[in-house]
Image 1: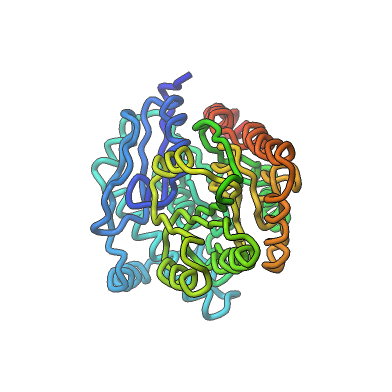
Image 2: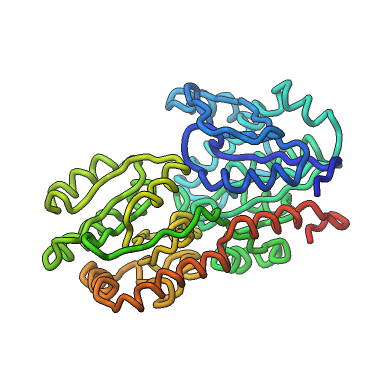
Amino acid sequence: MIEKNQKLILFTNYYPYYKGEEYIENEILEASNQFSRILVIPTMVSLGMKKTRNVPKNVEVLDIKTDCSILGKIKMVFSKLPSVLKDPDIRLKELDFKKKLYSLYYFCRVEKVFESIIDKPEFKKYISSGGNFILYSYWMHVVASITARIHNRILPKNSVSITRGHRYDLYDYAAPCGYIPDRLYMLESMIGIYPCSEDGREYLAKKYPKYSNKIKVKRLGTLNHGRIECTRKQMFTIVSCSGVRNVKRLDKIIQVIKILRQDYNNVKWIHLGDGPEFVNIKKLANEKLPKGAFEFEGHLINEEVYDWYKTHSVSCFINLSDSEGVPVAIMEAMSFGIPIVATDVGGTREIVKNQENGYLISKNEKASRIASLITDIMQMSEEKYVELCKSSFRRWNDISNAEKLYKSFYEDIKHINNGVLL
C-alpha cells in the first residue's frame, strides 16, 4: 500500500548512471510500488558519465555530476578543507598520518557533494513539497555520511535516515587504508543500520555495541528468471561473474582450470564481467590455459546476464573471492539452479550450504583441492548432480528471493513508531 505522505530519497554511488549497483534494479521496482514519489541521488557520477538504466515512472533522478578527475579531486579538497578543519565533529588526533590524510579527503568529498545536492533547485522543490522523508543510503560509506548530513542539517524534523552495509563500506579491513571515517556520526544519525548478512551484523554489533539495537540484517535478493537445465554433457562449463579486480582472485580460478585441463579436455571456464584487471587476467589466461579452455564475455548489463544464463549450458558456478558481503552473483546463479563452489568469506556461508547446493572452501585452500572438489561434481551420479542443482534453486527461494525480501523490507521501513523502525 502506498503511503502518500511518505517519500523516499535513495542515495547511490552511480545508479542509474554508468555501471555497477545492478542489484538496485531489482529493488527499485518494489520501492516504486510502495512510495508515490522517489528521488534517486547518485553521488559519485563524474562529468561525461551517461545514464544507462531506465527507472520506474514515479522515480526522479537528481543530476549532480562533479569533476572526479585527479585535478577535480584536488580542487574539491582545497575548496572544502578550511571548513572541514573547523568542524568540531571531525576528530583526527588519534589517527596515523595515512588515515588522517584519507579522512581529510573523505570529509572534503562529503561536504562538496552535500553542497552540490542542497543547492540543486530540483532537490529544493522535492523537499518543499512536504511530507515525511525516508533517507536511504545504499552504502555505509561516503553515501551514508552525505545522507546523515542531509537528515541532520536540512530535514531534522520530518525525516529518518537508514543505511545498508555490504563489504568495503562495512568491514574496516576491506576499506581504503583499513579505516572508515565518520562511522560514529553515521551510527548516531541513522535510525536503522542494515548489513546484508548475519556476518556483517555480528561485526558491527561487536565493534559498536552501543548501537546494536539499530543493527538488523536486511538481505539482498535476485528475481526469479526461471530455472535452467544444468548439464555436464559434452563440456563441463564453469562460470564466474564479477568485476575483474584483485579481490575476486580470477588468477586462482585460472590455476584451478589449468589443473583440471590436465585430465579433462572438456572443461571450460567462462567469465562474465570486466574491470581494472581485465587486460592482465586475459593475458594470464592466454599464457596458462590452452585455446578453447576459457572465454571472457566482458561487461554485461543485468538483463544480458540473465539472457546469457538462459541460452548457455552451465555446469557449476565458481567464486574464489578474498572478501565478500553476500555475493549477488552467487544468488543469481542459484536462482537458475546452478551449483556453487565458493570461498567461505563474509556472508557467503549464509547462502551456500556445504554439500547441499555446492561446496564452501577456505579462502586459503590450494588450487589442487578446489580442482578435486570440482572433479567430484563432474563424477557424481546423475541423480546426485540433479539434486545438487535442485537444492541450489530451493536455497535461493528460501533466502534470496527478491520479491519476498524487498516487499518485507519496504513494508518495514514505512512503519515508524515513535522514531523507531519496526
